[in-house]
Image (cartoon, rainbow, N blue to C red; front, side):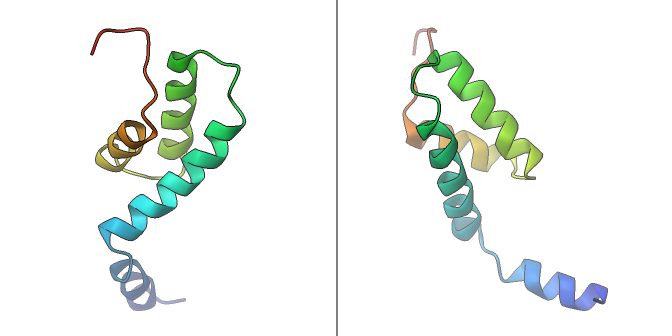
Length: 74
């Protein structure tokens, strides 16, 4: 595969598509962690999404949308 093909494929993914992929992945992970504390859930989801290459803005949005409340005051 040449670089132009790779660039074209990446250009087709917009921010909303990236968010939907990240959210779907996070929901699958979240469903397996019901017995863990919120801080642990957040940390694990953040780590998973970082390893998959999602940016901090997308990760932050996913965490906010999941509405996981950690022990800290909001």
